Image (cartoon, rainbow, N blue to C red; front, side, top):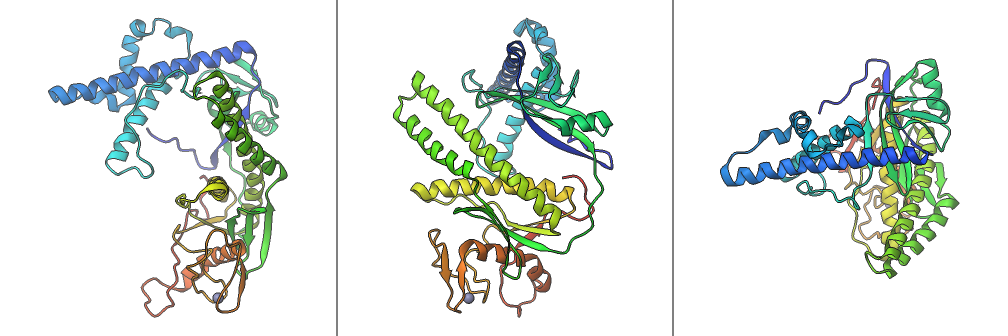
Length: 428
Ligand SMILES: [Zn+2]
């Protein structure tokens, strides 16, 4: 698939908005999402048949690697396999077929080692109960129609559950246009993810400051440090988040007590899904405010690259898992906001021992465990774990500049850090 590229001076931004559809509009969404699943399963059947025929007769059907070829075939047979096809959006079928081809390519990439990350399975049929309802529209009646309304193909004008005046302003001024809309059911609610192409704002003047950001698992969600070891900012874990965590543990326990597959189990699972969604929303909101501030104020931000989840148990694993989720969200937001605001984002190698390295003398304390919140170094320095990590991160870009990697006489320092955004680049 060819990725859409914006013309100069334009950037693509995404917004996810909760919807408040009328029952008949929700029915349209559900019908299109069902049609998408039907087309996905039809395409998976073509793929399976091609592989089976290939194994038996050596005659592979190459068309299954092309979304375009499969769509052509779908249009020839849809009258027979889906006589009701005209009732749903044609984009539902296109989306389902594209999804199946992507699943096939992901599986192939994973098998041949070209795709990083966890192993991807061969495309399978989606069962109705397990499919996550979603459908993407890219053409037809598709626009923001007010500070609380969007127009979507099929459903017409749908009320939004939140105010979208920022999007409405772009529409009114002619500085933004909707490229696509994906409706999705999320924890019992309908949401729409809108992609808009908007006019890029003027770039802010360059800033010299560099900060290192560590994700905490204690009272603070983010710890922002200056290279000189002083605290620039600490973002506390919001109270709402801690309350959600208690509720999350309760919902998890309730689910574990129910018989799997029973009506009560399904009810408990839905409830857990809602709590998860709220936790993610509160965390994301807190991080959004911080990342906007960070990328607008500083010239460079250094964070750790995503770490592989360690094998820890019990409460600590719980806390670690969700510090990892926060780290993932932090990185995601910084990646695009750094580009918007002309800030450099640096990623430290995930094996760089940011917590274990003494920021005063450079010694690495190999005996430091996750439970140690403070530690003292042989040189006499006493460190707060998170502050020390942030300080080390903040110093990485400068230390890399002064110590070329081929200079064997330089002190051995792990400075594997890479810059992901360059000044002058507008879009993420
Ligand atoms: Zn030391």
